Length: 247
Figure 1 (cartoon, one colour):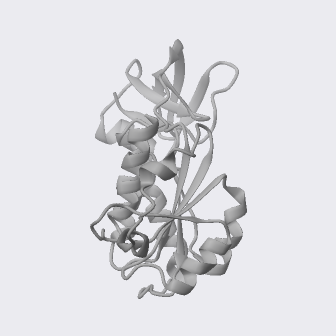
Figure 2: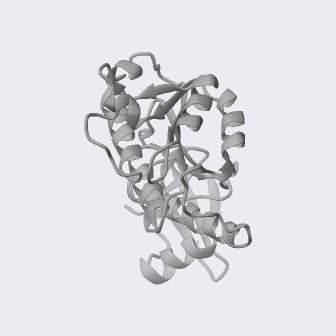
């Protein structure tokens, strides 16, 4: 059954409107009409809903009584902070990260980032990434669309740390040490309903200066196994490990 996120919550009559691209998708692509059923997501909850009417202005829907669907969200809130990577790697991280339970993506300008963020075009890029997150959330039946934030400086990334319960940084130097901090051991100290921020470097990883500053800010280094992972692979490794641990 097709899933759509509502921009306005259900009213006292359990009704709401779907507008814009989603309304066009319902009427023109799916060819749905009054009486057909969809899954409507409102305020982080999903309901089986019936289409009441399809108009040129949008699609009016009504949620069915006792149709609340199971929650598919990870029991911990995981935000990914990644140094700006090259090419379309952010697209990949957003799409696959959404499928694996990511709550938010926070790109940052790392010392070794080759790509420089174009502020003039940045709004459209974030908008496109947010659309990728929405489509991925619909596909994998989530009730939350991960938030894609505007890129920040490394200094501002450190300032964000105080908002989270658990702070981790994927450091390849940790993996090379004689006693690496295994992710399984780090996750033993993470509990349901906590918020977690995990930092990943761009191509080339985080610099030693950044690693020390992160450590001073309370981040714990973590090893992602004996192999060095690509910048777009490492976040997916962590999300998969967390899914295994908590789900």
